Image (tube, rainbow, N blue to C red; front, side, top):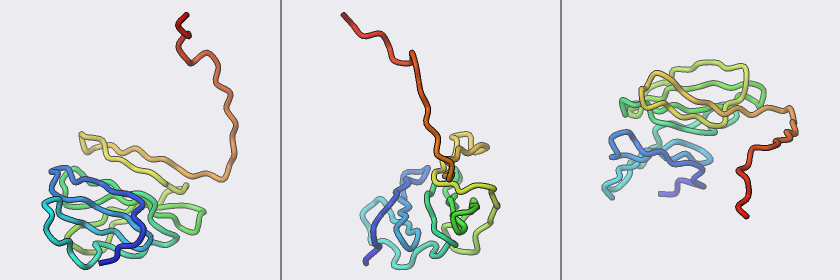
Length: 128
């Protein structure tokens, strides 16, 4: 089975499955070495899916979806099939992780604004 160019992997909370994000779809593989399912868990996603993370229950994935590079959505995608639950965002999310307590998430956002930062006095003193 050809799954394209793998962009991201995410290990399930129980350590028994790996979710794979490629150019076209999200697949879920068993870690045991058994044959993977031939059908993807999900295909599609507006302008593309940028990142995936497992919900702590191991029954669904959280995906960052780009909507025409203007805004984005977070999608909760059931691993056993079904339509994703979608939450609109005013920015394009490109990275996501679920906190171990399962009640919070962290997002990385893409923005068309370019910034230059100057950081001073943040490195430790050099040893003499």
